[in-house]
Length: 125
Image (cartoon, rainbow, N blue to C red; front, side, top):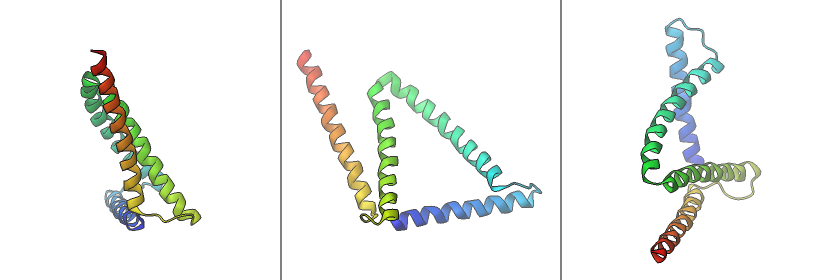
């Protein structure tokens, strides 16, 4: 887990340095806050547009699909927050396998939920 976070941090830092150099070569005097504003703003709006298209398609199919994706994203954030907290407090090991097993736990319970719902739907018919 530590290695994954370090790799991601290295990628972000390299991209950050590239953007600083690019902005400087263009004669732009951008602060770190300016970069955060533009980069996160642009990435966020691209993400919003992609999610908008995907969720509109999913809404025609099933609201449960949207609920599942939203909950999965919350679970991912929570799992990584727990792993980082373990590293900071030294109350457990920060391991990628812990995160993977945590997400698998959610997927297993979600599968059980959807199967139960399907059986209930069939029984009602």
